[in-house]
Amino acid sequence: MMRNVATVGVVCFLVAAIVLAAGCTHIRPPAGVTPVERLLITTGYCKCGECCEWRRNWYGRAVYASGPLKGKPKQVGVTASGTKGKKGTIAADTSRYPFGTVMYVPGYGYGVVEDRGGAIKGDHIDLYHQSHWQALKWGCRRVQVKIWLPRKK
Image (cartoon, rainbow, N blue to C red):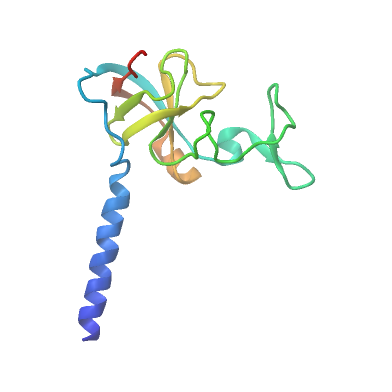
């Protein structure tokens, strides 16, 4: 009996790991829109201070480390669009790829533009990862990306 319980536990763990590894299964491209394919520079980032340029002040609060907001309070893990960063969050140049743009990046999966960054310009996107190690492992890659721009209202 104990062996069967252990087997069920292992199977449940493996199924959960596969579902989590599959990534952004809830993100899908808009129906009826033809994607554009572009060769983009992709880099990885996470919510850490090294990736997002924040530090803790002497009160222990997160603040911006540089730029026009230097020293101002920073909400760690919150994107420029106000959502919480998660797998599938993409930072892009919003003058080129506005919030809501859906992208498919081979090796990463589907994502949505929900963030921007000071160093993200033109055909460069940043892919959100759960840990700094995963972001570093992704590194910097040139990838052919499928892009679905949001419909104009």
